[in-house]
Length: 275
Image (cartoon, rainbow, N blue to C red; front, side, top):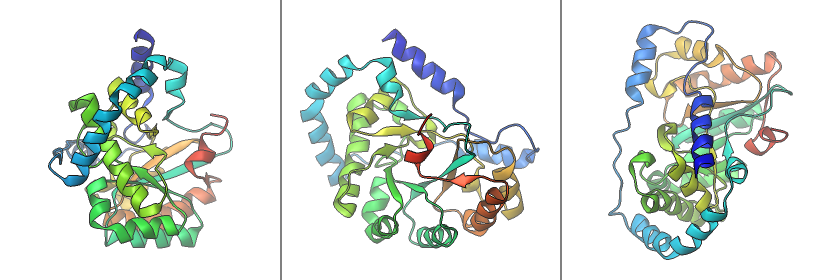
């Protein structure tokens, strides 16, 4: 267990949740981004999908405990993606908090026009509300990933509750796409050993990020574009949100700017090759 704790501490130290040092971002935008990180979501544990998943998780707990007891630090590390390799100028685009009936189709069209892959980390109850948006993203070849059912802070939950958040979303997304998600992301990037193990127990690899320009705060097109491009580096995982008008307005320009600088957008699978 000591080695597992060391791994989590290392991940926390290397996980970057905001723009890297470089161009100065306005103090007002930094303050707004910090405020927006507070997660007010509550666990939707009265929803039928959540209750069904909780029953499944409880029934599976014995098997999961046996798996976790055999898990070594090196094996757990394989189930976390922090960034990609420095060589090759590769970047991965990720979008959280969808699907969104207004913005998801627009993001998909921009990405298709630019021939850029991306991963959509979807919230379970949102996917249940807008199933056609999930199907649209999947039909167009984008990776559909798990962003929990309730978008609640997982570090505040029990092990079984955290696993249930992932299980309920896995069940919904598989029902809609026919494919079980492979990747997950804890809301706010808040994780500890239990959260990593919850993802592992549901067959998920936890994906963090290196660049967060704070698009969910809709800071304005010029500020967002400047923040997005301030300090990109090879192997970067870029966090954007499916629900921001500013993101829709700047995405094509951001992609074009990255390509001019020699960056190549790849899927998460390609990013972690030779990590």
